[in-house]
Image 1: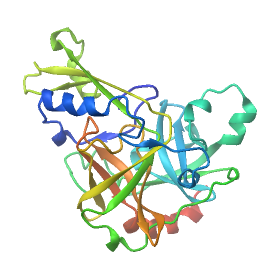
Image 2: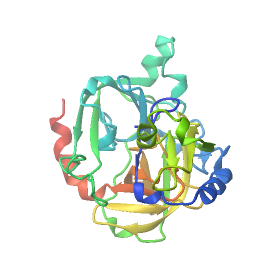
Image 3: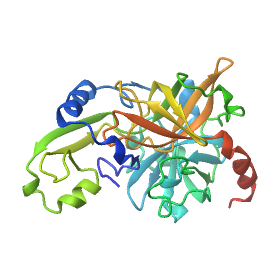
Length: 303
């Protein structure tokens, strides 16, 4: 798990890390300083899209994820966002998580934050057993929280017929994740515990001997943003978006919504799962429809 402002909660496809240093740096320069998820835009206060999206803050591991309201007391997110100790997570209703996390104004916190009472990971999600699996990881989970919804917030509709998901279809993604990625050349011989830094995503190397390396810094997370990306391929229970053109999700967006437009309204089609290490190639999303029956069956039994 990579660390930045608050620790990152985004899984990476190592197969997408084979770009040359020059190519990646050029791509990075096109997106650093952008006001968006990656290449997106800030979600305005009281914008309709914001009322179905929440922040998830793990107080134990100190990281953020994103989630979607699917009932007055349930949130859909990624399985890898779940802390086994559910009570260590908080649900936050605000477009800027930094204004709530760590605030000393208890009235503000009480209005915008809710305690998690239970969390349920889909049984298909087995990261240790599926380490080498590329597709259909079952990266989806349900969170239950206590308390009522702040004014304006409401559950989103889950896509019932996934046949609308086709290659080239426009998808709206949103989340509280990183908007800026910076690369800087480093001397790998001077990096203590180089392999640990590579595994954590703090260093990226472009050759098998780890001699050509750069440090990776990310920032801009904690604020709700949205952007549009096209579907590039579909698998049995996942779809991929082409995020090579400077638009897409990144660290901290995990668990957040991927919407498709149906009859003029946005419907929840996917949950942000993982993507390329520098957020500049591919994004992978768990398709919600195949798990709809499981979601509806499990929610009544959660604490």
